[in-house]
Length: 323
Image (cartoon, rainbow, N blue to C red):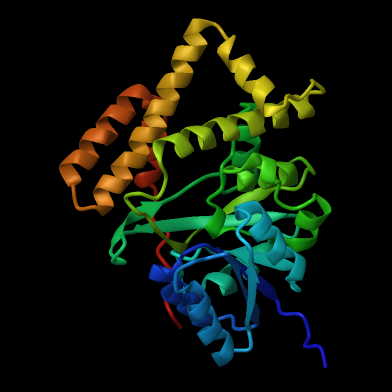
């Protein structure tokens, strides 16, 4: 007999993730909300990933393994979506950890806000050893904050492994678009927002986000940065009835902007890179270097630095405690 659909499907794409995979799986299996399925999609790994997945699948019937040839993150996620059975999909990467109450708290949040199409959360940075290095409190947390982003025509970027979203909406929109990698998640959530349904951040720390020194190369970070800008250029163009652009046409459009705009764009890209390097240095135990990167980034984008500082002094929202 076919088992009843679970309350939530956790989709985890994996490529050579053996180093932290067992810990990530354990964090899901330890959830206080135990009515879930864990879909592990192995994207052609060549390390011990397949053996780890097989071990867990043999121990727990909620673990559903999928093995496929290597084809990239968008295809991997789409295969997970295709077999998911729950109305809600929660994302997790193979090196991150769920707080034990994450699924319980996220399901409660979306139940209390039935118009949401997706939701993320606050999160805590951890290093390769699992030590904590401070929390992050992204926006928007309310419909008013979301509206301010939209009125200002600003991009919205949600931390993918913190997200929960409606499975059917993602499928109806065509799932993840391989052409938008490495910003396939930004593109999907932008298309969700374009339906008119809100996406909000739940003001609770529900994820431990692991940072590696070599997680993202400078070249990949630049492509990701420009892909996000391209996605939201087209998002706001469509909202305003203007033509959208293919990626190459968008890059050419950016090159033809006035020199002051190009200079501001370069400063923004450099600042974002420095913020990223600051976090990497911090988790690597190099606090003076982290502070130096942070100071340079703040100089390039003082507005962002002020917003981050203001959020850091707001009342904290601690990790939920076990009951």
